[in-house]
Amino acid sequence: MTARQIVEMATGYCGVSNSELARRLGWSPQLLNKRLNTGKFTVEEWEKIGEALGATARVRFKFPDGTEI
Image (cartoon, rainbow, N blue to C red; front, side):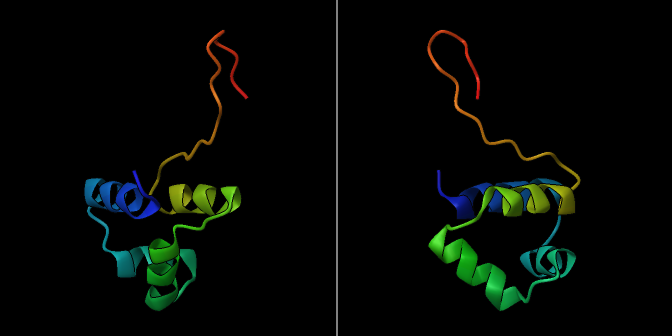
């Protein structure tokens, strides 16, 4: 799944447009679209997107033995 798909699914679930998400992030709609096209977000930006949507974003690795980092 791409970053764009994840964000579109989340905004669709919340009923928030991309332009509204951009406003909540303090970004221009053009910047958000550019970032969605490249798919390059820092962990901190994922967390900020989650907060803007009233959600929690988590990035982790889960190993076969159950260890999560």
